[in-house]
Amino acid sequence: MSDNPWLRYGLIGLLAVGFLFLIGFALNSGGAIEGPNWTVEQLTAEGAEVQPIEGTALTAVFEDGTVSGLAGCNNFTGGYTLDGDSITIGPLASTLAFCDGIMDQEQLYLTLLQSSTTYEVDGDKLTLSSGGSASLIFSEGEASGS
Image (cartoon, rainbow, N blue to C red; front, side, top):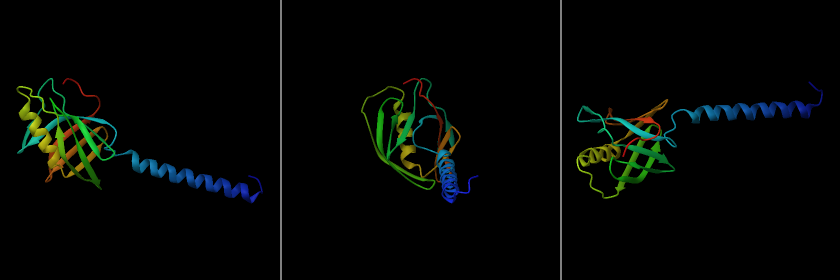
């Protein structure tokens, strides 16, 4: 290394900034609820696990304080806030189409979303919970069906 102290201090400073950048990236890269298109794999209501109706998509995208998605038949949107692992969702607004045989599932999904109080992201899975029991389990990816 050169005897120039400015070069030495510059290199040390550059390494410190790079190290801090890597730490910040590592802290923010895991557990990110924002960005992915989340698709429901399972709903839990009153202790019973429910699979989405085949051919329907229950999705959610969280971005900049707004959650939106497809509730099986209708599109929805609303606000959300995060505080640590706590989440507050709603109120939610949705379009008003009627889809025979899907409306009960849609109402359940929107109710579970709005009653969620905590969230956890583990890899490509998102779990929204209420009162300590899993309410909604999502996987990251594109929705299929409508």
